[in-house]
Image (tube, rainbow, N blue to C red; front, side, top):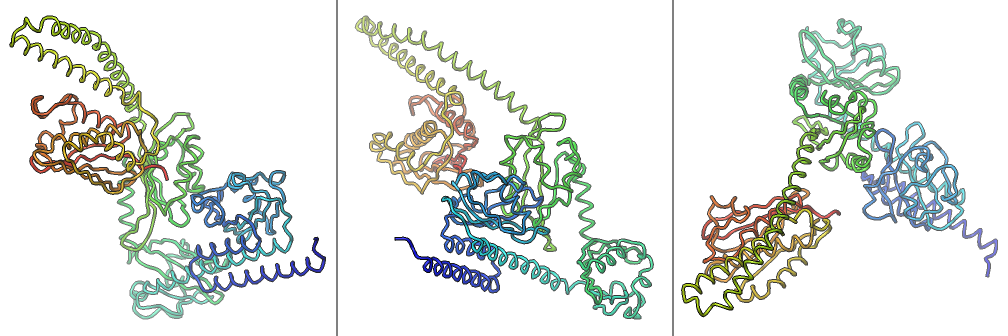
Length: 639
């Protein structure tokens, strides 16, 4: 039964009341909390619930203005919030919204001619929605938006509700900025301080300021600033003071005070209608260290760069950038994100995403640069947030040119491929004559065993045994040569499951030796399941074989080391002489005679080749009679 006009009107009134209450509650939270992210999280939740939509989001404009990133949101996949970026150009809804003071209402995104839907929206089947600017067109902070997968005509009241929530967030952000500035100003009270009236006369100096600039000790209150600092009448000091008074905007700068001080100062001036408050401190030691740093940075081949952790604007880039990238570093000072246009297209999005995660997460990226002359260079760039003894926080990075190393690695890979082909061909061609030798030995044994006598039979057994071991060694060599060429793609592997499968395969050997295998929780890694099964089989089999007199006791564990997992297999066996520990991974190298322990002598060499194919390392720590620990590293599975 259709609702009456009266009931629709009543419902609309209730909706508006609910929206007003939501705005009021968020406004109260904004006054009570300093946690902006919590406030934003509350805002997206309240809007989504109040408007009965699936998605709501807060997009923050990144330095440079080219992109916004999903800082908070509801409905989106968990891995997107805090990571996903959206273009802020005119073709995107976000970019269009940043140029409008009024809410942007979308009835059907698929046919809207004002902009195209970014992947963030289209991949979630968004149809209708509202987006509004946070802040102003002149000083935008970001975008607040809400979306639904069903076609819906949002009302003007709905749009005003979303805009009111965005205004609450904008006020909270502005208040946080003002509070930070005040906190910074108060923290400088221990610095030297003086105040000037609107005419430029000193009205107050604290003790530190008197100590630094009142050379006559007669007092400066009442004196005109440019009578006192005659040498600075045409300097940056006067220019910055007058600009601050004219614009009524604070200014911060570094300034050198000549004789008799011969000192560098950091100056922060805060204007008002009645004058100027000036805080300054001695930064001479820091300037000396910076000069020393520049001397080192400008005489090495690596690129050194420093950025501000808040704005990510570049504060310093060493000259090596020009040589390696083939463009002037001055471009980056004016446009910090301009470096992306020279990053190889296949690497660009990954590099953009990981650079945007700075300074919250350390950076370690290897990528290609396409210079203006079309030469391709390989770079490894690392960076992280650091703080010095003065509490000054910066992001410092280093870029290393890997082009020559990559070229060498490529040649080495080609050489290894040829070596693998040779090893495969040689071992494959040995199979036929060996098969003939084995066949004739078996024929001699079957026809003439009774005529050979005891010595003959013993010699024949030696020959047959040697042929069998030769076949095992050839098979092992074939397997060794195929590690790189015949391996499966590296995919997520559950090591807990893999180790269980290996123990099942070795069940008879484990039971016959009364072996005890214990394990910690093992991780998911990125690898070749079948090859890693060989690694664990070899290590567990060796631990059982070389256990000594007692039942084998084996423990497997893993620890996280950066982007790699370190897996260790411990045993309580006979151990290995330290002088032999590097040689155990060589092909066909054996520490014991065939009479003591059987085997081809290629198992650990195969393990090393497999681990190296995974980008890891393998090593052993052991003492004779004290057991052994074989450890290797494997890349963590992608999150």
